[in-house]
Length: 303
Ligand code: ADP
Ligand code: ZN
Image (tube, protein in one colour):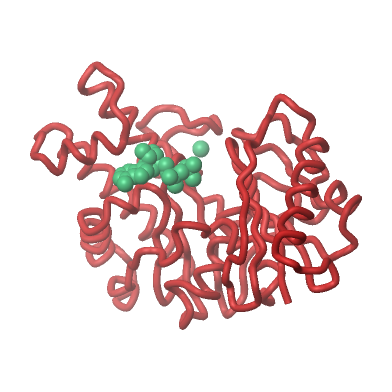
């Protein structure tokens, strides 16, 4: 049996045919064109799905459902996108009902980080865990929480929006209006913003990490502070959920060992309980296709 996974992002939407063992049999990427009505985007998605099925010789009767991962906030109870900052043209769009115009299948919608957590449980770094938190550190920060063998989605699908934990109120104002949110002080965007201010020119987070690795002192200090701030949020997650492990993914986690070592060091000092201080902090196993596989997981595995 197969599921369709749809990973809606601010710039592109990935659609894939995913088998029951998590293999991506076929996929396509469509630009998320925010100048057209989202219903039109769904028309395009439906056409892409029909093309994939035809090309793979898979009949619609072999599909068990469609999983959709999207940036939050959502209203999963109503099958709607709520108010994602980077998907403005989709605000309040009933994406599940729109897809149901084409497919009489179960259609499940969850926050993209929540879906990615389920993918890590299914096939990735958290296969053996009944309690873990998946954190994605990228343009922003998000999390998927898995506790007592279940995904914690909350009443409307918005649990895990940990990027807006306040970490440092003395820092500037976040997109959400609060001061010093975790993502304001610890995301890729935070690195780029601070490095650009320091060097008085536009510096990407990737360039900043490269400068730090090459020994640029003031950028090294900045990056060390960001890694410490990542640790601060991780301690809060450990103190809150008592997980068996933390799984970290997203673009910034590609920095690898320097980030993981700094976060482990911080957690080993400041997590409140002795076992929490030993929490394994591991890289996500799924990178490419993580969003797609997570979306398909919403259909393939119970949560
Ligand atoms: P998105 O936020 O769209 O999900 P990513 O997960 O790729 O995308 O995260 C993008 C952020 O991660 C950017 O701030 C980018 O500069 C940073 N990033 C991407 N790749 C790397 C890398 N190899 N090393 C360090 N930072 C990276
Ligand atoms: Zn915020």
